[in-house]
Length: 330
Image (cartoon, rainbow, N blue to C red; front, side, top):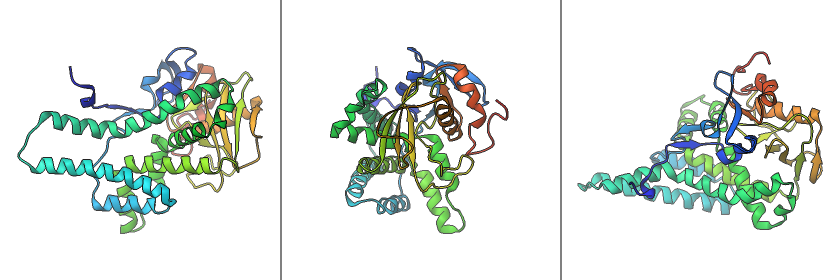
């Protein structure tokens, strides 16, 4: 039997599978839309997952230059964290180069390298998920007080930031909006594609810190849904539902109301606007339908619900920001 530390993880979930089970009514099966827009009922293991999605790639000087360019736009303490992670990755890369240039052949070392490349980012996300697990459980039970603890709000905001930046829809949306008007822009866009595994994690750190730093200015609220229309979720579960956000175009909004459904009944929102008040807010069917449609419009393939009826009305909105919707008619 192969050692655990030598096992390369192939199936990378860009939306936390454990999170999706909250729509499983006590099981691991949920209702979701497929690539053809049909509704399926299957395990969460089949949703929002790609082979080797987080696998690391070799970084050249150009890739490192682009990473550092983005990092320099961050506060000093975040730049230090970025560079610490980057240096660790470059040390691993150097070790591989030295090995490849030597005449030594070691199967265990090679397996270890492959495992590190496949598992590094996946394991980082898993560590954030583990820390967020009791917080998510408490919020699903309306225990908003858990975020009064400073360490808990730090962990949750870091987790929250990565739920935005780690997904395939976020990645593809960023790639689609990168300008390619001249040689330099093309080089930067190509470097971002190659180094996205690192950039996505770096961006998640930045988003999480900004949300934590702005926690006293922004409105943090729990939305309680006791209507007949349950909340749904998607392959991009944290979306900006501020009124300034376009539902049909990929343009950078000036403000953000970050909405994150936690279960069919509970959602968390961080608002620049004054739409909700701090604490717990009961929502009506009109609001639930609006939030579901905005979440669906910023999804790429999958919207996920506790029943088929919960997602069927929102299929027509899927992918509106990325391409022609999957479904023309409800």
